[in-house]
View 1 (cartoon, rainbow, N blue to C red):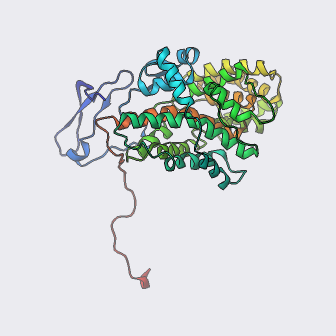
View 2: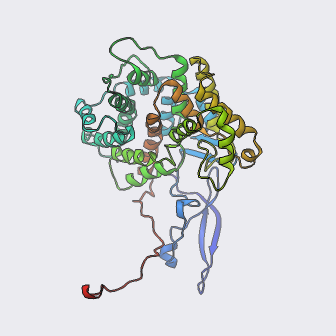
View 3: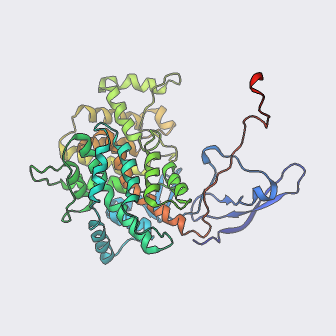
Length: 435
């Protein structure tokens, strides 16, 4: 990765009793300039403190850019709106890794390569039997994905582009199979093995909802909707799970273990579990007639009730992914004849208030992508417990692209955050009799 990002400008830090320390300013393609403080500890014996990394750039990346104020999301420079409208998820996965969209020949070759690796080792299917049937699918996912490293260990020289490419192909191809098997195991239905005559998303729907008893033909509208969901969740800059994958990978860990770590992080309700929490909230409200009561509770600072699926930590305006998912949501509900379903009427009533009520407009608490994607998945028939698994399936494309970018960065080092220690001062252990 090119490291010559100096603006020619500098920043000065003045500490008591010391001459000013000068640090270079680094310039991005988009976004805020960064003060390069890597030499700070060695030069001055002090660290910066930034809990939650709210103002710290942990890496240089060419993959994804978010402008929260403008409500803009770019993959490799392409607006998410254009990618969702004009490209398939596999084209986006190719883009995230390679930096460019595939031409027709590259697209066909990539899709064929993915198709040939969708099967998992038969011994791996027996791992599912080690879990309780009612285990949360994300717990199953964490274990099974981590176990891939015990089965596919022939390509573990990650300095080799071919080995990195093989790892990328395997995990992207096998994730739909693993996710679908987690669902089938949870419901007690037989595993459905992938078919090479189906597209990536069609294959996933077939493995999720098909049975040996009858033919399964996924609706083009549903297929397209799920493809868009995958695209919108494929990457999102240096969020908690992506940072987890990078930190695990910085030690040289194999990519399957890194992805398992990312899945574990994504499981948190403040991250990937937000769409599941949103549907649970709708069930709690129960009916359109109760919306007013819960809206007032959401406005009350002393009430513990929170309106899930609204607002976003990064986007200060409308989440650009939410605009796309809103359209997909309408298409799916119309296709399935669910416009008058109790839960979906309730969601629409909440959406209307959030877009028109002065309280929500002033605070910019617009419906986010989790709000709409949860509704779409529920309509398709995906149970709430599987929502975060779908998220993980899609985000694996971004995780693997970020993992490889980190390994090929000439400035790559094992992650080692520092701390502000506020514990007890150094002391001696007292005798047992005096404790």
